[in-house]
Length: 420
Image 1 (spheres, helix red, strand yellow):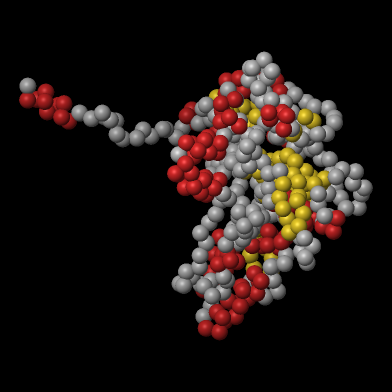
Image 2 (cartoon, one colour; image 1 turned 135 degrees about the vertical axis):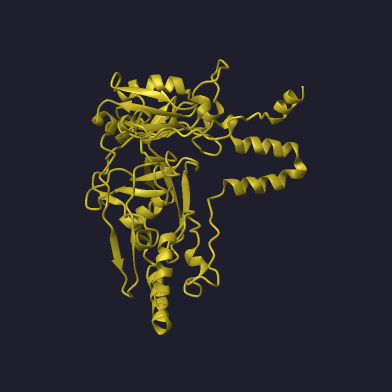
């Protein structure tokens, strides 16, 4: 009896505590098949059944019989294509929707970045640009408010019949779909409200403008209802909500033992309030430190002054800051102003009030076409959205400041794979 008791005492609920090592053999790997595939995820799982998506998307893509889908989880999926040109055409026509809600797709990669499938490559129309600022630089800066711009469709030497300019941006799907932004003009020119329209984006939350839920499931509204029930906690809850929904921030400081202490101030290395992104890429800061530490005495002071002046010289050069300090590739400027053009979907107040159908049943929110033209099933129109990268892969570009300090920037990547 004592042996039995001892056996029970030595037993564990987790008997196999040693991890299993999957053999590194060809028959255990699907890499070759995955090279001809795209991966994706739904943004509103409550309204996007993954099994229905697997069955329906090949028809929308018009590749039925030449692709097969795989449900990887409740929200993620894979489609393996038979032909390369079919795969490329599907990627070119982004943004795609299923059940009127957007999905994020990108080409499979063996080692995805942490931001993989977090961005939509989407065309945005910018309206109400002041006439004195119809320039490539100003348009790029206004597009960067949405997120990082990679293409600007603008030709200043040709007639412009539309009251907007189009840019293509990497849009973070966790952020709201911005409708407008107040911009202060230089030299006391007052302010102007810039308007934004997203092409091919259909449903969104009426309240917070995010692409991940309907209004009746909006976490913000749910939180507000809870706050009303607990009036004494209302102020604390609202402050917490604002912090959670605020722009991503970074605590950027320069310690006393940092080689850049006294050379750059914390405002120069901090976060841009308008975009929520760092003003200087950490790689550039590290290059500056190494450049200073490589000398001593008088030469070190000279190098400190060079770094200080190199950054100061870019204060009034937004494109230079984008290229040399943030390591972002300059946007590709194209003269095909309607390239990859798609519909813009909007909702009126009446649509919002009549979110339920007259017979009492729940139905899809209606949409109105803001531009006339043919519409294909499942997405907007247009071909060839994927332009060649403005900087070819493998090339390194460097600049040499007038003061001697130099740095470089890396190339941009496809939608959903790189973060600023």
